[in-house]
Image 1 (spheres, rainbow, N blue to C red):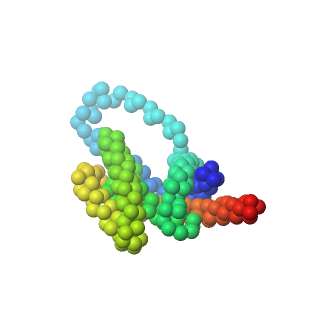
Image 2 (cartoon, one colour; image 1 turned 30 degrees about the horizontal axis):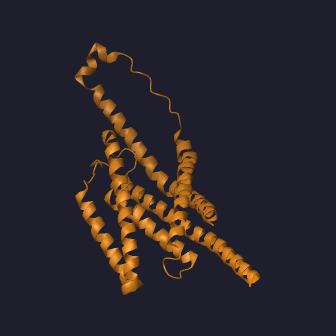
Image 3 (tube, rainbow, N blue to C red; image 1 turned 45 degrees about the horizontal axis):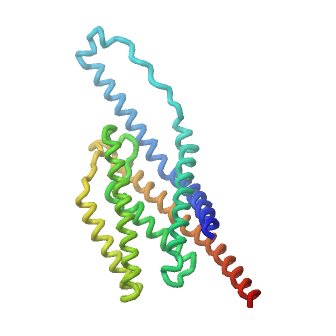
Length: 266
């Protein structure tokens, strides 16, 4: 059964990845193109400023500049095939992990149907894995951020994702125990409150990153970040709904098979 759920999770993830790619292409790529254009404009302005530098009259300054490296992958390929490949593979990987989490959670949340369990799991994963880390370290378009800090920024972001996931798992386990004593509603509220408090403390202790240039258009930044959130909303929503439908069918078939075997034994 685990193999069946894993295959369905990867299939649901692929479907979610394709739809998320379409959303990112139509709503996110325009702001990416704008940011790249701004980056090119800034580079040309820097070159023009260098032309008026007194050092430009130095004979050594007239030596031919090295030829620019040819672009290996065109922007058109990056925004279509590259985007689909990246988001699609991400969706498949997330779908596989999602199916493993579902297999562990299913049956431990009372008598919820597979569709409901998958929807709740997808909603919780969206908040813990993406939304909370995004609020601390929001995504930035090209031309934003210093090249020398890419490593530290990446480490901080994924470290916070791992921390949020760990706190979320602990809060869910704690809430499950409280539900037996206080009821599902109260146990869930206390667990959610504990997660909020702990993650808020962690966010306050971790360093903040603000490398957005003052001259960068706020509308472009806002559009890009809104598209980033929308892409993840599409991904997790479709994943939860698609996997819920696929898993419910598989689990229903398994239940019918078990019933028929019991009748034969009887």
